[in-house]
Image (cartoon, rainbow, N blue to C red):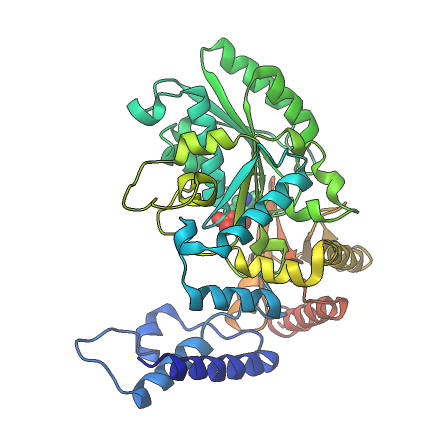
Length: 458
Ligand SMILES: Cc1ncc(COP(=O)(O)O)c(C=O)c1O
């Protein structure tokens, strides 16, 4: 298939889509039972002509949820930044695999620069620290857990796990933690879910009590996972206190900063991760707060040796030139690995570290603007406060599930709901740095008139 012709088609379809998104930022979902009838998705023995193919492709694209628009608040990613999109598209055109210098060339340098800068911002020594990327925060969290496991039970990678090892994480942490316990062979039953305080932050007292009890009972505490930006409330666990506890009991300290670890770029908000310099591993998703397309999940560790111990393997068919340092396949979970840093680099290089910091600040300011609106309006109930890029609220006492699902079904707005303790609420996130205050005004106005029209009529 002719590449140039397909590139032209790509530009044409993308432009059409982006124009249409301005008028229709949300598409009505196709009922699942009609999906294969409405769009010709099925694959057949024979191919089709361009005249047949292009309308099918257009229909598929135009009916796909619009997660980059100003009315998408449903998950912890969003928006479309031209400069990072350019990097992503070029990495597709280049199609390097990031395991060797021979195949990745200067792209390996791009990755190394990003990892080294992030390490130094966290306060790690760039000489002894190292990092890599994996396809998402769940996977970078898994990498942290595997290093923790291998440090406590060095034979685990040869003989299988031989100790009963326990891992600690708050009840508000991400669901990748229990899954990863199973993947790492530690067992879901050995995760200790630690209670959170009224703001959704892990209780350090409860954490220490759980560790002490486990040691008494003969378990080996292996890792504490602290979250910088919990999935629902976007709360920050107290990293400093947790870091000291990890030192005291000799436990691997992992910081899951997938959601809001990016505050490290902001002079104003980086104090929320004070103590991160004590981390044994730290993850950050540029595809959440930092205007970068999915996925760009980075893990850094002060223990370069641990990354090698847990993830390297000989492969003479692969490693044929260059030093280990420039063959990042040796510290990666994968073999073939797509280039996930060029898109972050094109943005960072263009707007500088200051510009990245401004993105972070803007998202916090947007969230505060939204919370102020909610707090000042008696029809709303607000469920969170303080520095957070989530706005958690209910409107007129209506079930948040009903509001969110009706908005989705009518193709109005994509926003989701969350739960803290027994309270369910709408969770509006301000990760789309392309949004402005007017876009939040538009969200509230549309939601309010939708509720009046569709949910409050008798
Ligand atoms: C706190 C936290 N950690 C990890 C993840 C997983 O990241 P990913 O979706 O990139 O796997 C998320 C996703 O929302 C998250 O909120």
